[in-house]
Amino acid sequence: MLPTDWIEHRRPDGERLGWIVPEGEGFRAVDLLGRWRHDGPVDWLTAEEDLERLGIGYLADRYRLRLADATVREVRIAEASAEGITVVADEFGAASAVGADPDRFRLPFPAPDALAPERS
Image 1 (spheres, rainbow, N blue to C red):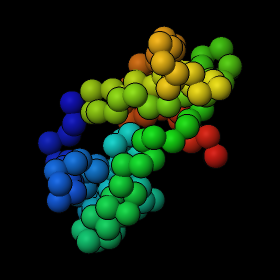
Image 2 (cartoon, rainbow, N blue to C red):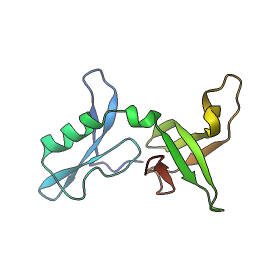
Image 3 (cartoon, rainbow, N blue to C red):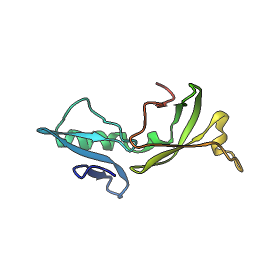
């Protein structure tokens, strides 16, 4: 359940880009994985522009998921919502192979630090 002060921010076509959260005299942007986009408060326009510049393309990127046993799996995001994040194993592009049944992992929202972009 999202805090009641989180304000949803959408593109003109209605696609959700994230949320803008009041903090002190300013605001902070939160992306669709629940990650803060700024270290501290910024003005409203900066928060909006950051979410719009970010878009949703990063959801299609490859990520690395560090499991509890310290193994690392290559994954792609299958679903991202405030109820949780689902990623699917994507070693060697398996997530997009026809008929594939890749391992699925359900993560909390916001995404844990164990989920990191492949290029980090």
